[in-house]
Length: 373
Image 1 (spheres, rainbow, N blue to C red):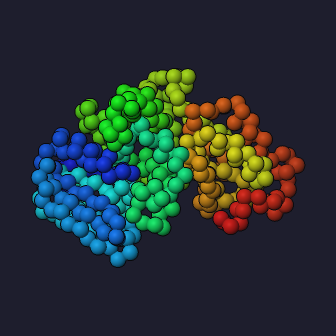
Image 2 (cartoon, rainbow, N blue to C red):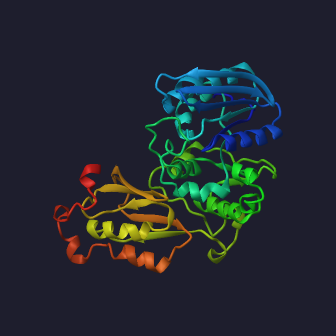
Image 3 (cartoon, rainbow, N blue to C red):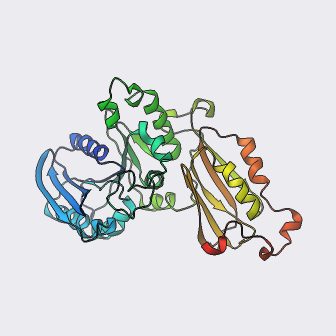
């Protein structure tokens, strides 16, 4: 059996570099001897690599990339730099990923190398500004258009990045953003304890009920990374909801006390593709996050996944249901959920007794599922 060395290894992911750096500073304050590795994507297809120990800078290097690819950034420099640091000294290590780089993409390469070295990842921390979270979820620009990615072909939105990272991470560090400092007198709601900050914090716990949500003024106690749980939560179609109305800042609070709630809906029968297409707007309207699985009458053997972040909704195929029982199970996170109205909207999409007897080929392919399957 490989012996695991008793050091701490933390991965910090974020949408914005200044938020990530504030998270790294907070972690270094509690781990003063830790080695810190951070990468930033720069204009001109370059990467800035910085390595420090505590607050002392040890290395600052710019590396050109042939085609500015995020995956290549990870493969060609993040991975070898981290492994080089791990091999040098048995010290605590904190890795700050380039903004908008997904943690699971990094760990695809890094985890096998950690296993070879007897190392284990302790925590994946998502750093964010809760006051900006709702606006970021509703931003309809691509990460490139919003200036949050240096890759022109990066067509993900901020919301798509965030829901994936919230699901994958085990911990989240909440920090005040630039707006709270640059416009201090005009943005009291964006500061710690302000209305926008608290609203975003509650949204965060609703989107990620599993998260250990931490403010740097509190003791930094990240949750333990469990790779199987992280991958299960971030699998397309997974419905991750709070248990018993508990979580984060609003533990034990009723739905009436929370700005955002998550509603789970189930359908007992396959769904009519045309009626479902017509109903999707009503189901998704006002939803910050929409996710789940669909059992659709025109493709009953295919597991369809429903996803939605802010203004965008998408469908994708996950292949055959296999041993899994076909079902429809979706969750809608919103501040406008009407449980009765939404349940009736989905129920109206179910096939009637007569329609169930029809061949799947009789249904109009209104959702263009043949293109997905």
